[in-house]
Length: 110
Image 1: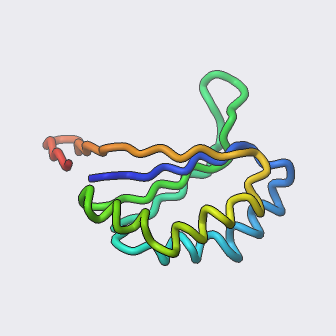
Image 2: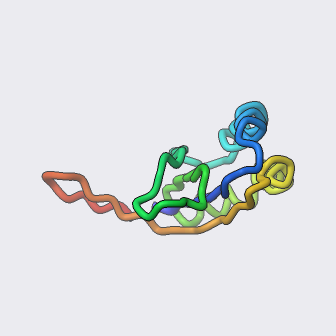
């Protein structure tokens, strides 16, 4: 599995961020081709006090080719343009290979 992680820093105005995310960005996420799963991780706290992130979005793709097709899409270009409209806390984009293990029996997915 290939993942794209978008880490959103704490916005200046969380209500404005949430409104824009729900009314614009969520639809763009769902329009990215070849995405198998979208996970939204609303950050609730940290083991080390202050935490620099507000939301982490994970887009899961089944293969490198699928991820490349998704990243080269018009939807991702629109997302990149859209980020400057509401990500006032900044953002980072990471690419990761996921390996999953389930409790009881180990299942590896690559």
